[in-house]
Length: 405
Ligand SMILES: Cc1cc2nc3c(=O)[nH]c(=O)nc-3n(C[C@H](O)[C@H](O)[C@H](O)COP(=O)(O)OP(=O)(O)OC[C@H]3O[C@@H](n4cnc5c(N)ncnc54)[C@H](O)[C@@H]3O)c2cc1C
Image (tube, rainbow, N blue to C red; front, top):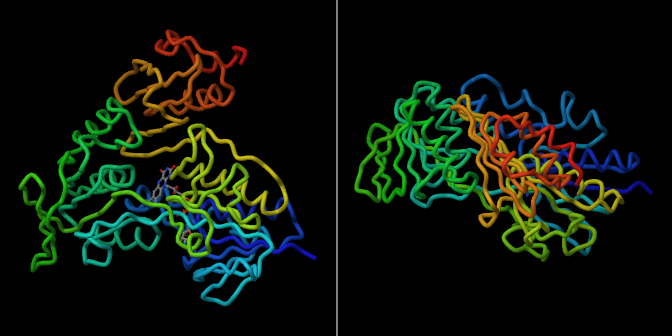
């Protein structure tokens, strides 16, 4: 009898799980259940091209033109999974029960909400879905003063998009520097300088202590430094947490994320999980990642394994961010204990490399896409490098690939 594979989620982890499961077992009945009402779409453009009106969410279906149906996958959109009945091998959904032989959970992340500025308050926006992006885009059309709370990847992308639209932008960040989780101090300082050059104001080491709606609809924000800023629109970008609620309620092991093994299997052998919602074995113990490429590759491995394979997931993580004309990329597992080398590059370009045991272990760059493609291969193949050559802009990384691992 054909295997029934159910995938919960509408992001890249779910889509690639469904596609790879079907590829591995073409006779399987693969069903993807998403609570969003549309064909699964790419999230990265939401804070960039979509906000400035250069693209629409529907322009980028994750499964490509024709969507998942073209690949023989059934999509139940606008359908929420409310429980997993492990004994009955059934998923309970708002559209009725679905029976599974293998299940993949790819429920993604939940936004961290600020109690002072919760979602649902007029003029307060969070950005996770296409519906959020459309609502924010509409309000930015009438906005003169925007305050962004949080200088992480999403907050700064929104700040850059709004500044490009001619809006006055102020960013309030609790930490003393921007993109503190994703960047070293020097790279963060370059990104900050570009925002300031574009007119964005920053309040660092500062938090919002009071938010008061005004009669005209704007919001007055009082900060820990005693300042008062009035915003037509506020965007909160204070990070995300894994959505492990369904899994926890079903009695699966969770630890701030659904715990999976190297084959994406949860504590129930018939249930797999992938992407932002998981905690998986990394080089320094159980790890979490919140980026697109991990979601795609992890989902693909989970899907193959749900269809009978036993592939191990081994990743060199990577993320990117686009802010103005800065293309920021990180690759590898960063470690504060690693030796750091900075390659001197002209303005608006930057490259920092981490070296461990004679090989590059991670790198962070701005506008160095070609170098980072070669560096990724150097990391994957653990090729020995000369730290002096890493710091020398005359030494191409492609040439270093010829050395023996
Ligand atoms: C605005 C934005 C910009 C980004 N930009 C970048 C970038 O430039 N570079 C980068 O590397 N990463 C970026 N990311 C992060 C990247 O998009 C995520 O890491 C990735 O989407 C995670 O994929 P996922 O499939 O694990 O989860 P998600 O994409 O979060 O998908 C989870 C899906 O599951 C659905 N769901 C949840 N619970 C249920 C349920 N019970 N029943 C049915 N459906 C459910 C959700 O509605 C959602 O559709 C960005 C994210 C956002 C929001």
